[in-house]
Image 1: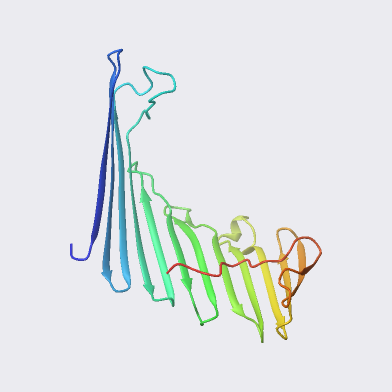
Image 2: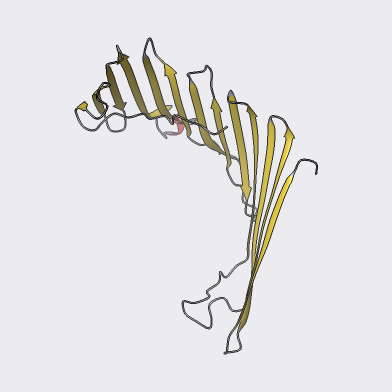
Length: 224
């Protein structure tokens, strides 16, 4: 296919022992990356391992092989627009008739200084659905200040699985006159509030109050 990148490897191991035992292992790894358009890329990988011969003989710990053959396929589609947004949706199968979760991750920049990250999984089937979604947000919050917010979204609170927004973390920073930086971190699960004061003129000198030093809770860079 035009523009596609295909890679594949085959590894063959053959064992012959003085006891007359023979066994072999064949492993295949294939990958296909296809640009569907300027903003859509599909990546497909396939792995297979086949074993033949007595798996656990003639030695107790040497040259042991799995008892069953395995195969797995994964597919991920990425939709992106420069560094404005990037959406990845992936699925996997072990070819055993059991539905596997769909994974998703959305990274977006609502503004040049704001970042939103959503990630989680969806389990198909009756009574299933969206699992907990992790939400991370970083945004300016007034002059020379920023606010970061992290939480887990529970889509089924009615089932007694917890509140809709759980394990909240709030991180607030404000710079005063390019001399001081105030940092406040609230962690709901630990029921703790930590406050820190950074003297910017002397970066190695930090005054910290309460337990622990507040730090950023949202990654400062993302892969698009």
